[in-house]
Image 1 (spheres, rainbow, N blue to C red):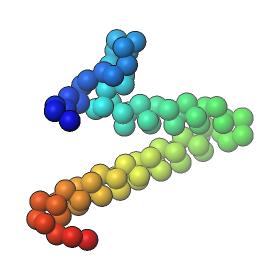
Image 2: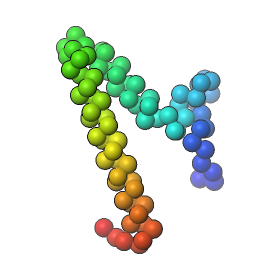
Image 3: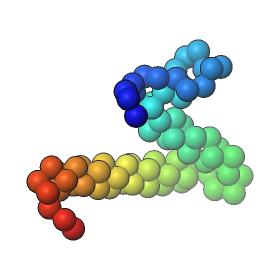
Image 4: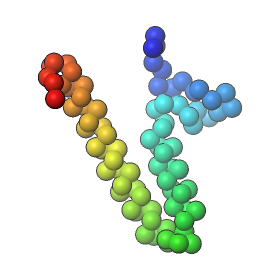
Length: 80
């Protein structure tokens, strides 16, 4: 990759920048909310939204720490 632009929009029909790399976490959470709405007849939103939000936040935090620790080890040449 010659150059990375977090605001690059790979979708030509996306005039608002919804699909930029930097907005992916926000869009992922929005998709989970829409998924919860689709399941609302089976599981009420007052139960599903907090659960999905908590799972998403936990996974995002774990993902960030895995990425951080990988970069930290690489910079210090520490193998796992």
